[in-house]
Length: 468
Image 1 (cartoon, rainbow, N blue to C red):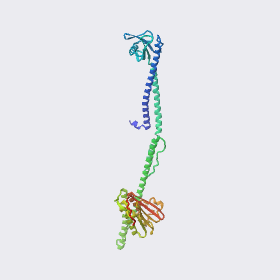
Image 2: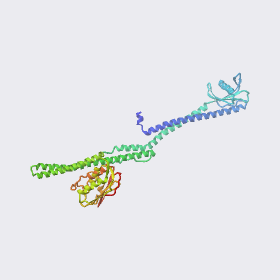
Image 3: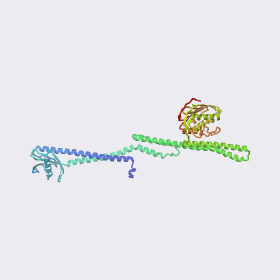
Image 4: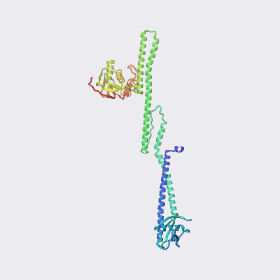
């Protein structure tokens, strides 16, 4: 059993074909030999009948072939007696019994296979005599020639079928090996994958090559390559996620290290200046509080992003998007009066959302404008009846090579990480995460003189009232 399990698929199929062919050859051979035997038997009976037809019309028995016996029997008191002459065997009792049966049957011809003592099997034919009244002519021919012909035919058939079986197995094994070569190539491709280090690399250049093998093998090859493409994509996604995680940890460490260093420095100054003027101590404490607040904001943003990644911490309810954006616009105007803002929206646009998180989205977008554009930059906030909100400014714009990563965490266009304009690089990442958690999308379109963020949310109801 173990040896059979270790046998290759091609060998198994070749042996299975051989066994099937052997069964088919045996059935075909048996049918052919049986048909040939019956055909030769009919021919044999015809030769005996022709011999007797000549005898029936003559008074004397014609010369018989080698080993044939011909006897004429008359009947008296139900017993058959041979007529002198002819070519009877040494013991003609068996032929006499055939004559009696033929007489009783009363047919014009009667066949029977008999066994003559010391002679073997014979084919006997009995028929009425035309020249001897009431007599029955019996001719017996040996089966030796017929059996010899059948044995020769059987031997030839076995030899031919055996040769054909050997050729079928050998050639079939070669054809199967050639036909299964694409499967062997795919197995070699799978083994080749193990030679690649996939720990830190997302590149899996191995693919099943070649062609042929039929539609089934082509379909398998295609499915195999599709699976490898999927693995390659998954490895690329995993590698990219690992790189993002490493970059995230490095950026978070850098962002947290700066306020911690400041707090440590001001704490040392506070300790050394403990006996100094109260105003100096208050200044140091104010700096510590400022850095602490800054670090708290950063930690809160990191926790929010972590929660948005792990789940959807939203309190969803029917919310008027116009009220949320209007409050954000009013807060921005109050905090940044040197940035003229125009607001355009219908009276009501209902969306299924968390109003507090939506307010955070628009606050982040508007604050981002105040940080990265000069005073006097015009800002426009619009809401459409379909639930699409846009935040547009007329600032310098975002360079094209930075737009693809603008929503990445800790990503800032200012590579030097200077903080003269503030920010941690998490504002737009939070915008993207919150909008995605709502099932919406946020897109960016920017060029010098115009930058536009478009937020699309799923609207639950639209009550369009006159504009206010």
